[in-house]
Image (tube, rainbow, N blue to C red; front, side, top):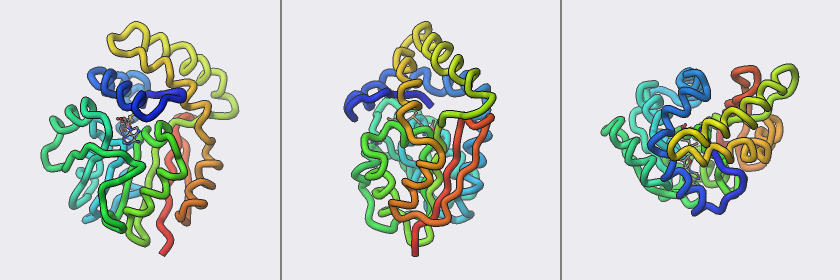
Amino acid sequence: MVETGRLPADGVRRMFDRIAPIYDAMNRVMTAGLDRRWRRITVAETVRTGDRVLDACCGTGDLAVAALRGGAREVVGLDFSDAMLERARRKDTRIEWLRGDVLALPFEDASFDAATVGFGIRNVDDLEAGLRELRRVLRPGGRLGVLEITTPRGVLAPFYRVWFDRVVPLLGRVLPGGAAYTYLPASVRRFPGPEALRDAFERNGFRGVRFRLFAGGIVALHVGEVEE
Ligand SMILES: C[S@@+](CC[C@H](N)C(=O)[O-])C[C@H]1O[C@@H](n2cnc3c(N)ncnc32)[C@H](O)[C@@H]1O
C-alpha cells in the first residue's frame, strides 16, 4: 500500500516498477502485519466458494493469493507494472497473472463473479471510470470489494498525520528504492472519504454498498453488488 500524489498513469506504473523489490516488506512494516488480516476479511466479504475472481491492481499478488485460499475456483491477477507482476508470479502458479490497465480491462462483459482491489484504486487516474469498468466485467449480482487507505477522523487523526506525513516518507527516504513512499500522504488526502467512496460505487451501478473501517479508521473496506 504505497502511493502517488498525482502522477500520470505512466509515472504511476514506473513508480511501482521501482518499488516492487521492497513493496511486501513495506506493507508489513507500515501496517504492523495487519494487512494480511484485512485481505482475509476482504476475501471473506467479497468472494464465495467456487467464484471466478479478478484481483485488479494486484501488485505482488497477496490479495489474489488470499482469494484462492478463500475458496475461489479461478483467480486472475491484473496489474500494469511488470516488476510487481514478476513478484506475484513467484507466489502462485495456479493464478493467471496478466499485464493490463484497470481502465481498459481485457475481458468480456460479465466474466467474473467477484472482483477485488487492494490499495490500488486510489492510484487510478479516473476513479469513476475504474468502478464502471470493474462493474462491466462482473456478472449481475457479482461483488466488488475495495480495500483502501482512508483519512481517519476523531482521536486517531493526529497520530495518523504523524505516521503518514512524517514516518512513512522518512522510511521512503532511507530505504533503497523507497522514494515513492514520499507520495503516500498526498494520494490519501486527495482520495474520497468512506461515505464519498460509497456514493461513487452507487453512482456506477453497485447496490447494497456497505463499508467497514479497520485500525481506528485508517483503512476502509467497501463491498457492493452489481445491480441485476
Ligand atoms: C499499492 S499497490 C497494491 C498492490 C496489491 N493490490 C496489494 O494489495 O498490496 C497498487 C498497484 O496498482 C497498480 N495500478 C495502479 N494503477 C493501475 C491501473 N490503471 N491499471 C492496472 N494496475 C494499476 C500498480 O502498478 C500497483 O501494483
